[in-house]
Amino acid sequence: MHAMPMRPNVVLLMPDDLGYQDLGCTGSDYLRTPHIDSLALTGVRFSNWYANAAMCAPSRAALLTGRYPHRCGVPGNGPPLPPRERALPALFKTAGYRTSLVGKWHLGNTPETVPNAHGFDEFTGFHLGCIDYFSHRNYWGEPNRVNFHDFWRNREEYFADGEYLTDIQEREAVNFIRRQPSEQPFFLSVLFGAPHYPMHAPEADIRPFQHLDVERRVRAGMIKSMDDAIGAILHELGRRNLRENTIVAFLSDNGATREPRAGLNQKSPTTGFNAPFRGFKFSHFDGGIHVPALLSWPASLPAGEVNAGLASHLDLLPTLCAASGIAPPTDRTIDGHNLLPMIREKAPSPTRALFWADGRGQGAVRQGDWKLVINGSDFDYAQGKQYTPLQGEDARFLSNLENDPGEGRNVSGQYPARVHELETLWKEWRAHVEKP
Image (cartoon, rainbow, N blue to C red; front, side, top):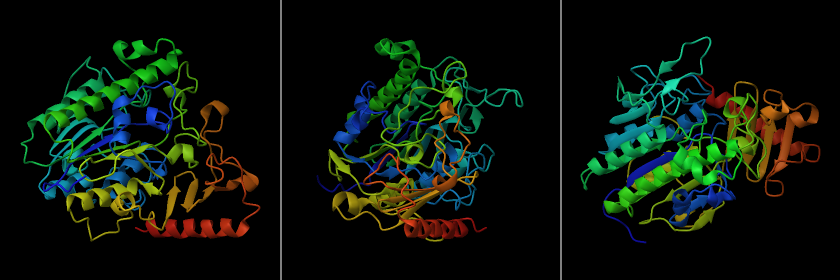
């Protein structure tokens, strides 16, 4: 490893609803993700990385701003990222980077909240949470809202009927890299639709998985298509001799889901794996928020390491800013921490607690190895638990994750003082971040 004189390029890769165990490098026994796995071989895999929400939009808002979702105005799916927020693309653009987003936004569709208004020079993708992979239409408001086309190039509708969404993302990302002058640093976000529903994959990507049941083979095909796109992006970086000095970050937005619309015949899906963790998307048990995370920068970070330090999406902004010599905003609270000392020097992870809260009264706090889930639910639709919070003593569910990573045993009765301490911290945090 050696220091590079030029500022690094940044490529941010984010799948949608990818479970912790949906990659080869995190333990899948049937999914094929060689290109994603190569990021673990050339960089660092984080075994204790958390999304700061258990659903799409607030998780993305936290990642882009370095601020808790409640603090940056996106506590749940629906509200746009306010124009006042200074997100990663705006910071990098101001520093002279060329910026591009290819794929999912989900943080606003009005003129002042679309990607181009938040610092992206270029945008090809969709504004809302998901689209059909071939028609690029949003069907998920029926019957209250007529389906509509939701695919854009910058501020104009872009029609590419019949083309598979992930293939378009691959082409647009590779072309963006190809068009940049060698001396021009860039910040490229490729935020995939896959493997979020609707469950669509090209026949060529499904064919290697014919031995699997139909649900698994389609999801496997979607993930293979995404992995191939990432391979093409890495290949183009290598062809341009940019790979050594490009930071590639791969992060899921939340855990895999059990929503029936991701399954067959209106039944909860049986694929998408968050093991060894409990719960699914929307849950504040670890299955909903403990996500795969990889960071590769061959010129400056170690390779092939697993880092167990406590980290979260909040930390990406200060870490990328530090790596690129960009000052993070000083006129607002940044909740994340620069992780470079933890990665390079094996320094302890930042001393802090991490917090979660949703609009249903569910919440969680992790401090060290201790985690308290308040009014938690597994959100396992197959078991009828999607909106049913735990009752009685389990409404305050305390675990020591070092001893019980699957949150299978509630030890709140043994450690009432710990429960009181963590719940007090959580209430104080909520009062602080939810101030107008």
